[in-house]
Figure 1 (tube, helix red, strand yellow):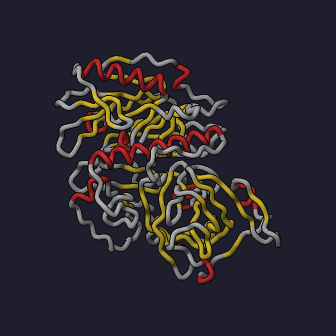
Figure 2 (tube, one colour):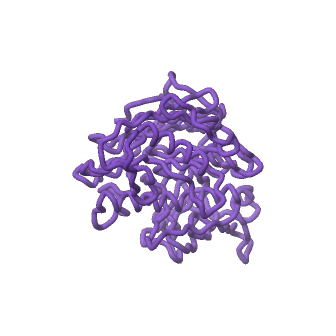
Figure 3 (tube, helix red, strand yellow):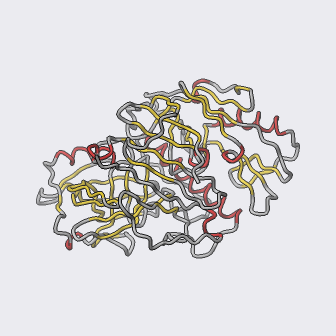
Length: 431
């Protein structure tokens, strides 16, 4: 039986500061490279290197936009991100090389664990980037009609004039997209999936759409997991390395083969208000050896409101609803015992002297995850500023979501086992 494991290489923030990966290396077998959007291999990186402070501020602003977007998914209404004078591209953090069509055309698609359907810019798309999929050149491309069952699985479906093409419209962050529902062969490394259903973008507005498309890793009917059940059995895991590690490599494994045996699990919950998101039951937070006082309603899983806690790979810094964050922050400050607390953008607990930080432990049903300092603190390049790398959820939307983000996940193997409705976490040195 063929082993379907994708070992994926992640190039993180500090890559631009001297690491030179071989960007032209071809994907071999079931090994598929994944690039951080700021890596030297990414065409989407900033043209001028950012200062550490500007990098942090931009990341915070993107996180703010993403939090508002995720909250809008739960509320089932559109929220346009508000950014203070910055041009914010609310895109997921990682891109993957995928080939579409026959003969194959290669695109760098963004991965997003909180979305389902794939969509890519197609020839003639209004508002898309200059790199598009030329569907007319693919012999295996076909549009799906309004009677196709997949047409009922997309948001806001409608018919074109002839009735031969199913069209769908949706919001993504601060953008809107219109796409024709289509099918073609998708190839990831050497694994090909024929008749993969995706949206062929016809029109986009706003600046949130990933330039070369999006590959959804959620658990809805049109996600990669659902469309490749025979290959990967709706199972995947990833391990993100420490931002400051020497080689910045991590891995993503698709399929049950090769997943860790020694791992703790907590139930994956399904919220009917947003069934694609990966909800878990956060029941408390411990700072040092003290479980802080959080109103139960602030972290409770609530199918009626869509409230609760999700695991998300696209947000960088964990966001907690205000009562939960304030309780964690105040106990953190009390234990650090340094009077002079400063702020940096959205981080309100920063220090200009060396500190000894307590651990923070997330208490989930049947599973505790204790975060060491590398998962809690960010340091300026010169080491003169240290901040607690968490913040309160946006206060300009009625946010009910706690989001466990990718900095807090680094150097852990995060295993999504959808058939058994469980999420596993194990410490692992991802480098």
